[in-house]
Length: 390
Ligand code: SAH
Image 1 (cartoon, rainbow, N blue to C red):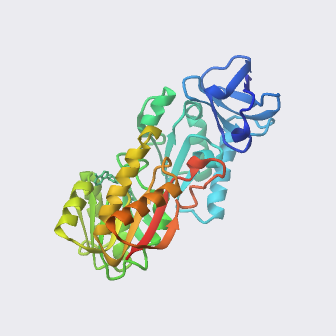
Image 2: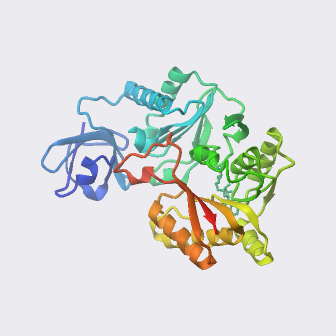
């Protein structure tokens, strides 16, 4: 097995728990390694740090899988890691639907597995983990005997690893339109064509957080996707809910979800650009008791952070203006490039521009089945805030 040595003065981040090693952090090597191979990593002075997979084509040259010199990376290794991840989810109470494997936080860098009851959706986002796809699928078969496993590797980030985008069955084919239960509601999920893995499990706890503020309320949701927050609002007693999304398919599913739960008379959905519509409605002086906003990540690259901040500020400014005095704004951001303090600052700037005072109700992050691993900042990515807009 090839050995890679970190350069002098590089290493604290890695020693403290970060599993990524960048190309410019590597110095000497011993032995040859091919793309996807498991290699060993040592500090400059030769102490063992860990082992992981290697990809010379990626800026993230090595991602560590283990810090134990004696641990062998083979099919059993993946079975054990996935089993541990499942035991952890059970321990913290996420059983029916959960992010079963959350990459780095489960010591399985670049691997995502979502469990939707008896169905599993997987993403292998780096070459070194993609190599083990068969072992991962075999582990899922063995632990869960699932009704279906599907690959949603239609993600651009794979190209940075020299991988193709692709999707398809990893088990015998099944009907990819499924229904899942969450907080007493039912949702249609399109595993094959839905966004990301089909459903945003990371907001499952946050959806419950709106319970008390929506009673009897007139609610507006921008960026509603399949209507999950809107339906929770109806479920918790909202009088009227309007959800907006730019995607026609998302809106069609949202409408079907309303019917599925018997809330078609309370919830309605429109396929529009929320930026334009919210701007227009501010002008028209429309007002709601509760406004909910969960826009997509406005940036995937560091260079565009400022643009993303402007986007968040703009949309939240509109959201606040549309909120009646004393009403509530429910707002989220899912990009890890905007850290929590910067998100709060952005909301504060929007409040200043809107000349409104905010009173904080709830400030939380993604559901705990997406664990935050300390010293790995990218594992904390979701910001979720409820404020009263005075
Ligand atoms: N809150 C949802 C997830 C929202 S994801 C949930 O928990 O299920 C963000 C959504 O914003 C996507 O559905 C996407 O289609 C939508 N979107 C992106 N740009 C938009 C725009 N300009 N106007 C309205 N919706 C938009």
